[in-house]
Image 1 (cartoon, rainbow, N blue to C red):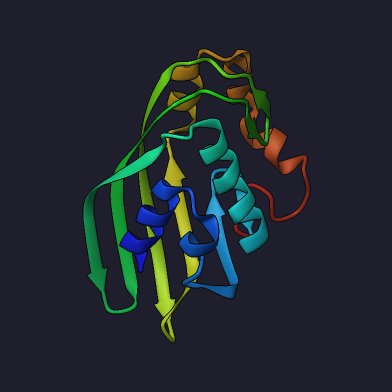
Image 2: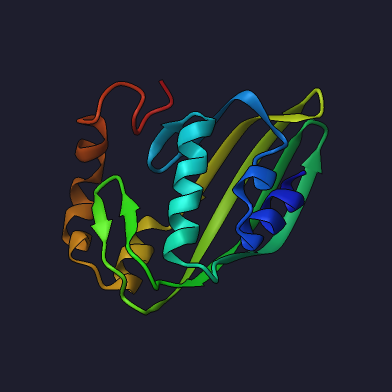
Length: 152
């Protein structure tokens, strides 16, 4: 399921990418807790900003109902990227960003997801002005309300 998710993301088909996610799946990300709707919107935003964006998997490990994945996201920043800290205008620069994902599967569906990526490396590579604000990231996320930037 996890490998199918990355393949479909690379193809730009977010409906197929998220087809194995349970309707009540919750994703925990550096941007906060996301339901499926917000998770799909974030994926679409990233893919829209970097149409050639793909995830190259390094390791996929499965233990019962748990799956851990590490890899590299690579893409070219051709269009505006919307982030919780604001929009990053297209830079034309290449991005290589390490990620680690965790999936919990139950009843043949992904019921929980954790995604971790190098946000500071991302803004540094794209050369954006919001890089100066990254030091204030926890406060900015928490200011957005309960459950944003925390698991609660």
